[in-house]
Image (cartoon, rainbow, N blue to C red; front, side):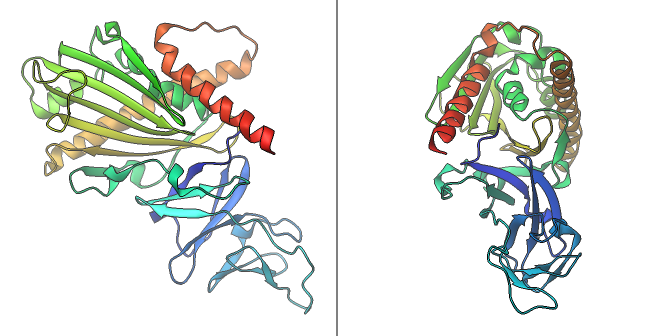
Amino acid sequence: MFLRNCWYVAAWSAEVGRTPLARTLLGRPVMLYRTVGGEAVALEDRCCHRSLPLSKGRIEGDHIRCGYHGLKFDRTGTCIEIPGQAHIPPGARVARFPLIERWKLLWIWMGATEPDESLLPDWHYIDDPAWLCIIGNGAKPVPMNCNWELNNDNLLDLSHVVYVHPTTLGSAGLENFPIRTERFVKSVRMTRWMPDVPPMPLFARLLDIKGRVDRFQTVDIDLPSHSVVDAGFAPAGKLAIDDDRTDAQRACILISATPETETTSFMFFAQARNFAKDNDELSRIYQQGSKVIFEEDIAIMEAQQRAAGALPDAAQIDINFDAPGLAMRRLVQRYLEKEASNA
């Protein structure tokens, strides 16, 4: 089951050009391309004649021509030409999906209702000059062999960093600090405040930090899966739990998981920071370290998916750190039921 009346990341802007791009999203084949004027278009990747994917065809001006029998479709998905006949049958069209291009990303709406631009998450960090933002994975999605909701679970339970990322993010004892869960209309927030602790290992090495720090972790996830992980620090004694963090050194990681199928998904991510923005060597090493972190997380989630597939009826328990993830799953379920009741 997928939420549909919401925005998902379909692609990085740089991925889509004058060559058709095929991608399965929410279990449905989609084809993306750009018109002569640069407008991004998303159509169902299927000719309405004999179902050859339109991505196997060719772009002609602003249109796409099927590579099997030559039917031509405009950017609305309407068939405008059939070789060898003048009459175009009623219903000769394919679905078109609304797109918004913002923050170097293409956001797609695959729901039955009118798209609501206000439901886009706030990812201004990508274009904000106050932040240095590095686009993840060379502006390509990271394929994950797991259900998309496992990514929400992973990000809302950062206690795992002690065990999964001990050399980069974790420090022994961080799991002993309590978390706060906040529930909003269409989002969930997890906050952990860690005063007077060792610095994050990765940044301690990169920034040559001496002494102890006050650390914080805040994760906001907007429906369905748009996450902002705000992790930062300052010298011990300089911050309080709800202080303005403007002067803290902060790394904001933007992550969204788009379902491909029920058991596979795409991760789109970018990394922004407000410190040492002109330090190219730090950026290089930070990217390398972050690559390891994401690979470690994905290995965990894919292993979870395999075990869940092998033992679908096995009982699970919940622990205190699960509160934010459970709140997010309940929020998703509530909106799934709302969509079903309005269908």
